[in-house]
Image (tube, rainbow, N blue to C red; front, side):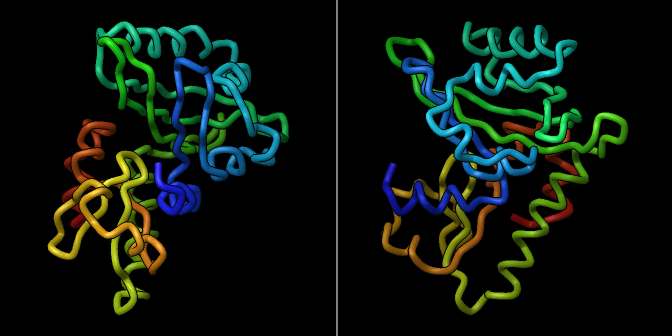
Length: 208
């Protein structure tokens, strides 16, 4: 990934992760750790197990099973809600969605996804409402800076919303533009892929 793009993705309000399956290395932006109260530095060089070890014991098996189904090729979308341990000793509900983004000889070698904090174990929030809140936040960034706004970057697939409102691969635009003003978001196709049960509500509420 281009260094400019990589650096910008780390600033995304969407807590994203990328798993290099061959080397068992997990890359993520700071938001994924800080929203649980952890210092991101504590997870630098993390492996997949560094995160799964934080899962609630009652959610561990079904979470591992959901991942295995995707890795075995029986399903395209990894989707699971689970409780995960925060730094203060409480558990938070996470909605975790991801897909295989790279294969080698037909076998998955890289996955990418987004996690959303659904709230405390005792008081979880409606997932679609949280998803709307995230996107609305970035819409405000655009409206407040529309004269300087250049692009919106999808935090999942890294495509960019070009001037003609088409979402295009980053290689199709001038990479230097990523140094200018912009916002993060999730493109319509990634919303439909990652959140099929919420996609209609979200896309109707906010034009993307």
